[in-house]
Amino acid sequence: MGKVQQHKRSAKEKRQDELGSGSEANKKKDRFEIAGEVEKCLPNTMFEIKVTESDVEALIGKTLLGTLSGRMRLYRIRVMPGDLVKAYVSKYDLGKCKITYRSTKKEISKNIGNEFAIGSPS
Image 1 (spheres, rainbow, N blue to C red):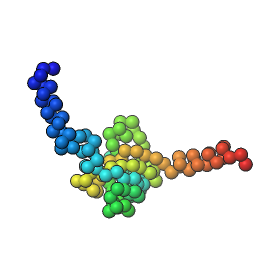
Image 2: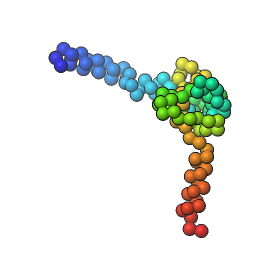
Image 3: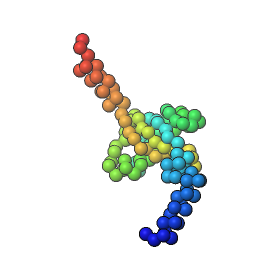
Image 4: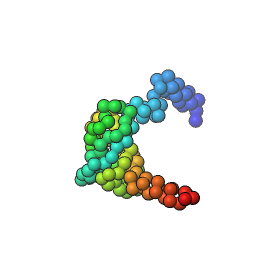
């Protein structure tokens, strides 16, 4: 790489540092993390999600339209009504969200039951 390209790259990095527009900074500003429960499955891998936890208090208790994120589509993760999900909401459209993680209540209750059944000396 020549001196000119190196100079341009360092100048660009300085500008980005001054503005604070790194990739992580933009992600944090543009989206809100939520947790909720899937209420209904809709066509085209869309879901109605009732928000239970959120950084924005106005979203708690609302029903959002959720779709699967890219990795969940790629690995064909199935989401069913009653599953607990983590998702993010864009600050530009507070009615839609992208699902990034799925957990079931059944898995949680099985882990609790097995923990007490196997580990207790009674």
